[in-house]
Length: 286
Image (cartoon, rainbow, N blue to C red; front, side):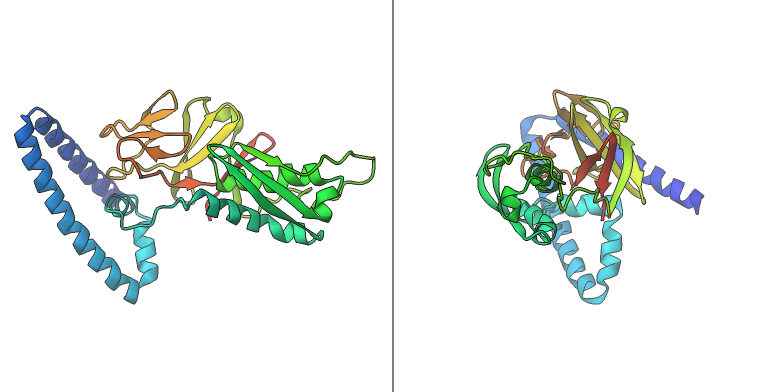
């Protein structure tokens, strides 16, 4: 089994290398020749996309679990993303904020409180308001930091400032009772310590067969699938400069702050929620 897997990987690497060699040859041709090659490439890709679309429709009807398992394969995942046959993993910002607030509402409501979105101030700020008993509770600051703020930053990595429009409540010495006073790490996996992630660099990891990269800029940490949008090649061998990761295989560039592909705008690396627990870095993979 190991030998078969090794041979399969070598065959794939040989195929990718061959594609790279032909791309280098075409780069040296004149513009008219390059246009012909590009049009041929687009026609072949359109044919492949139509075939894959029909295949997916059929498999969905007969064996959806098998399709989900197939997408776990990094090459299959990369090709389907390349052809835009998998929905983008990043919903609109406002929807993700609402999802974040919904995730903390059960805890808030258990204390007869709630939270409301007040404003989104692009590019990096969200204003919220605690309501009910949470609005004037001595634990409101703790509730904001460990509950609401953490949830929003987990669902929306591009948001770095979460501001409460509530008046600050002065702590009087009474017992602080916040619904988020204890650690809520269910479903999260501790992968590394903060100091293990190079500042301005990346750390490749694997958990439950899933290959990931953690990236850090000072205290901001993000997690992405270790898979380039172009042929699903691994990104951890790439070079990082000024917050931009360049895949060494075919030169695709990604802004690590957002996961956006600069080479092919509109495409994003698949992001995974990340949070800190002390000096530990946790990621949610399920």
